Structure formats: C-alpha cells, structure tokens
Amino acid sequence: MNDTAAAPQVFKGLVGVHADVTAVSKVMPETNSLTYRGYAVQDLAEQCRFEEVAYLLLNGELPNRRQLNAFEKEERANRKISKVLIRAIESFPRKTHPMDATRTAVSFLGLEDPEAQDVSEAATRRKAMRLYAKIPTAIAAIARLRKGLRPIQPKPELGFSENIFHMFFGKVPEPEIVKAFDVSMTLYAEHSFNASTFAARVVASTGADLHAAVTAGIAALKGPLHGGANEAVMHMLKEIGTPAKARGWIDDKLEHRALVMGFGHRVYRSGDSRVPTMSKWRDIVAGLRGGQKWIEISRILAEEMLAKKNIHPNLDFPAGPTYYLMGFDIPMFTPLFVASRITGWSAHVLEQIADNRLIRPLSHYVGVDQRPVPPIKAR
Ligand code: COA
Image (cartoon, rainbow, N blue to C red; front, side, top):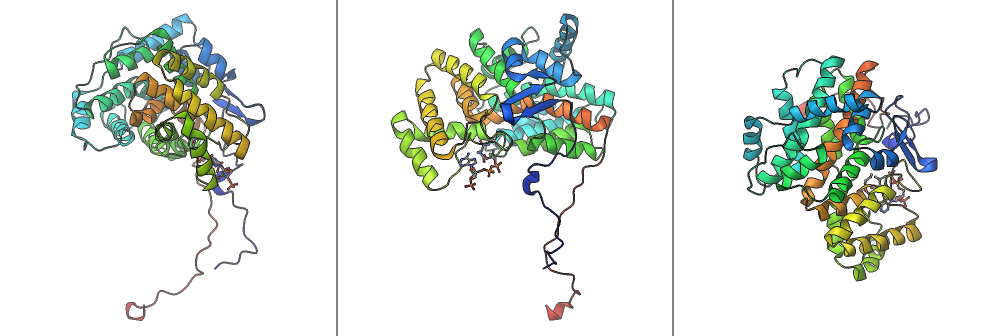
C-alpha cells in the first residue's frame, strides 16, 4: 500500500465540492428553495407553461409573447422523428427497458442530425431545440411499440404537454391533468450539478457533441439513486398495496437499514423545494382519477420517515404516483423525466462550451506499490 501519511483529502461522491460556476439554477438547501435563472421554481410551475420554462433555461430570460410564439413554432415544426428511427425502435428486443431505448434513440437522433459533428454554440443551440422537440415523440413511440401498438404522429396544433398525452394515448385529458403534467415537466427540468447534468458536462468538456453529452446524461439518469427513483417509488407503493400495510412495511425496511425510494437528497437535508408543488398536483390528479389510497400510503411513509429517520421525500415521491394515475406505464416514468431534463442538460452544455475547461479530477491511488513484472513462469 502507498504511504497514507501524505494522503490528499478525498471528497467521495464529490460531496461538498464546487466543480464550477453556473448561472442556470441555484439550489438553496438552507431555505429549501430552487431558482431557475433567478425565478422560484414553484412560481414558474404555477404561472408558466413548460415551453416558457424551456425557453428560460435555454436563453436565460423568460420569453415575451413574440419570442414564445417563435419558440413554440420551431418546437412544433421539429417534432417528427424519421421512419428509420421508428423501425430501429421496433427492432429493439421486447424486454428492453424504455430508459435504454430512450438512450439509444437519442444516440440515433445524433446519427441523423444534420449538424451532428458541429460543436459550435450556434449549432449546439439548434440541436438542443431538435432534441427538445423530438424526444417526446421518440419516447411515445417507445411506449407504444413495446406494447405492440402503432406510434401516433405528433399534432402541431397541440402544446408540448398536451401533445405528449396525444402521442401516448391518442387523446388529451382534462386541463387539470395536463397542467399537473406540465408542472412535473417544469419541476424536473433542472437541478444544478446533479449526477446526469454533471455527466453531460464532463462529456461536453471533452469537445464531444450535444447528442453524446445527452446520451451520457440519460445513462446517469437511469439509476435508481437518481431519476430511476420515480419508477422505484411506484413499485414500492404497489408492493405495499394498502394503507393498512404501510406502517409495518416501512418499519421493517428501516429496521433492516434498507433504502426507501423517493426519500433523501444529496443537497437538501430538510425538504425538497419541489415537493409541495408536485404533491398538490398529485392530490388534484388523485381526486380526478380515484387515487386516494396512494396518497394515504404516501402520507404514512412520509410521516414514518420523518419521525424515525428525519429524512424528507424528494420530487420523485409525489411524481411517481402522479404519472401512474395519469395512465403512464411505470417503466416510462424516467423517460418522461428525460423529456423535461433535456432542457437543463442543454443549458448546461451550452454554458460548459461557452467557457470550457476539460473536467478531469485526480484520484488518490491506494493500490499496491510499484513492482517489477514477473516472467510468466514465475506467476
Ligand atoms: N432511505 C433510508 N435511509 C436513507 C435514505 C433513504 N431513502 N436516504 C438516506 N438515508 C440514510 C443513509 O443510509 C444514511 O444513513 P447512515 O448515516 O446511517 O449511513 C443517512 O441517511 C445519510 O444519507 P447519505 O448516505 O449521506 O445520503 P447521500 O447524499 O449519499 O445520498 C441519495 C442521497 C438521494 C442517493 C439517497 O438519499 C438515496 O439513495 N435515496 C433514495 C433514492 C432516491 O429517492 N433518489 C432520488 C434522489 S432525487
């Protein structure tokens, strides 16, 4: 072993490390608050449509009417995906997880992109717009093809969130349901240097293109400690099944020191700023779709986690059952997160390339000391 007397300080998991500056969003754990470009996320969620938030993240300011119209027009004009991509998705093995399919579809979109190899700021901005417009179409196609259903073409007359429902289900639900989904898109859009955003920035810092960076972001988002938690939450709620079983279930988990999905956060220690807004809309959706039992189970779990571990729920905790009650299949929850987070990832990649320095930290070696290579007969 190396001499550990002179060991440098290691920040495992990069806990507490500021890796760079950013002007995209600010997480304030002291006050449980989060701002995108200076605006409180809960105000954006309630007062703006997701298209406005996407514009804000990508351009730094909220759009005026004219800017919003032009932005929406461009998004709507770019929604279609190629027949070749649809055929590719169709050829994926049936058991493919939709997050793997999404990662592959985005990588495929890079192959088809007319400016794939152009890493200039202007081309990256145009590619960001195309990804923002096409990812919902790709994930809706994935959702339908895995069930043997034909994909549904996007409708340019529908807004971003309405169109997602149309492409998944062939119909647009009541405005409260669409608004709840739109709120989830806003809340999921951005969260500073989380694992997937950091992964995307690392790839962008090497000079690789946006599709490469976003593919890495999707790969990181899949994990259950990150975006995959929204799926894990719903599996957990279904496993518990009834409110009567909730307290016993969670006590048993805590006794065995198991992780309870949808709780805890690396940065927030006393509550996730996005949870009250998402919970409010989850409850509205549950009221319309008859999902009271999921709310009741959730209430018991949150109460026990706080009392026994002093750990609060994160955004995935209310988002999981909200998507479930809207009719989305559980394995599609994290791809829906991708449809939103593409805006944050793209904003960060643009920020990274505007003032780039290769991201390349050090590691402290703790393996065996240097030694001679023995001849094969001596091993
Ligand atoms: N369930 C049970 N215990 C939890 C927990 C959870 N969801 N989250 C944290 N803890 C416990 C840890 O086991 C640790 O206990 P210990 O000190 O007795 O070992 C303590 O709380 C501190 O947690 P820590 O390991 O410092 O958290 P972290 O910053 O490394 O991890 C998460 C943060 C998000 C990865 C973690 O909370 C987690 O795995 N949550 C569940 C997955 C999830 O919902 N992810 C979505 C995040 S938005």
